[in-house]
Each structure stands twice: as structure tokens, then as C-alpha cells.
Image (cartoon, rainbow, N blue to C red; front, side):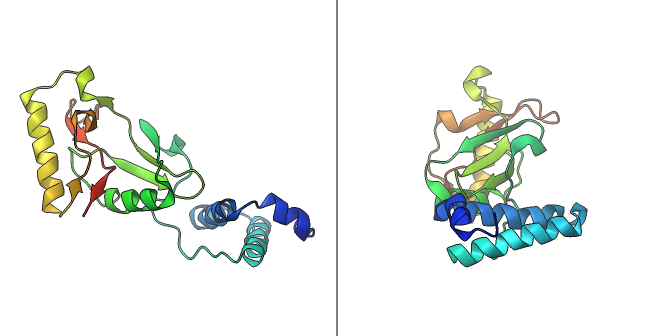
Length: 181
């Protein structure tokens, strides 16, 4: 296929598909390069170089949080983002820096193709009943966010969630999607 530029051009698709191919190839080498054979690395490099030459696109850096599957984590859930690549990048860069027991855990994201965020699996708090303890959890989560200069733009009852993390015994958590500085 690499020898037939016309066929390759058809196969690599539009700019979105080309960026997805380049990002995933670069991520594969960065995350699994140590286990790939020299031949596999040569093939990946050749495909990457041809796609760069044909598309004019270059992937300079793949974010640390980049992932392509929720299979890497236990109790993970996927959220597809309607706002596209920009919304995914904004959410991942902010959410990826957070670490608090009352903020939903962020595991990774894929900003190319069909953007998605992989995070802790949760239930709506309404499924468990809302208590004063849960209100305190929400207040602690908000205090943490506000202390970092972040605002939750869509705070509502539907964004107050129940975490079943083993060490927490069912605390309320806030989603990390829709945070702004």
C-alpha cells in the first residue's frame, strides 16, 4: 500500500482521519516502542512519514493523558464530547491536573477522531439518596476547585455523582467536565 500513493491517499481519509492516524502511530511508538521489533518500528515510521508527506500534518507531541481505550482501567466509563477536539483538550488539560476525593477521577482522553474522555465510573447521587454528608462532600470539592481558580460551569444536581471507590464508602463527587479558569 505504501508503494501506491493514490490508494494510500484514499485510505488515509480526510484531515481528521489523518491526524488520528498520526497521533495513534506516535502514541504507539512512545508507549510501546520498547516491545516493538526493529521491523515493526520501521513500518510504523514509514507509514508515519508517508502520511506526513501526503497530508502536510505533523504531530509534535502526544499529551501524557492520551489513550485510545477504557480497557486499561478498572471501573472506567467513557464520555463522548460533542464540542470536538477543542472541548476535549480543554477538559483533559484541566481535569488531568486535579486530585481530590470529591472530584471524579480522570484516567485519560482521546482528542482526535471522535473525542472522548475516560473517567471513573459513577452513579447519579439520586440513586443513593442525598444526605448532609454528601452536601459536605460537594462543598469540599467546590472549595478545592475554587482554590485552584476553577469554576464548574454546569453545576446542578445531575453533576453531583456517587463514587463507589473502595476506600471512600460512597462519597459524593463532582464531574471534571465543564471546568473553566
